[in-house]
Image (cartoon, rainbow, N blue to C red; front, side, top):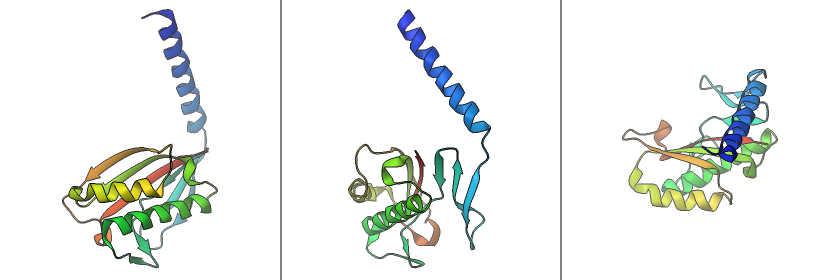
Length: 146
């Protein structure tokens, strides 16, 4: 390995170690405990906000219209939580999507891309052969950092 590569890796390792040390000394802040389920709607650790999974619920009911409508509403719900806790969509760094039916990926992806703007957050897609909570087609779990 040449000296430039070694210095680059060393600098990155120092930055990661410093960031890890900084966050390990912080106290998490738990927001919005759910009245129905045993989890918080969000947890903040330092500048990072971790959101609980969001489905296409509006006024307590799953929206009609299939995976596109549910994805749009789930993103609206993510955005509402971000704003509530002092963040915005452009602060998103990660979103994990869980689809009940992977054959609907194209429809999901179209609605997901329309609901966000570049640069897109890092992402992971998971599929299941079991129905999601309340019969949802999609669930999004995201995190943001200022």
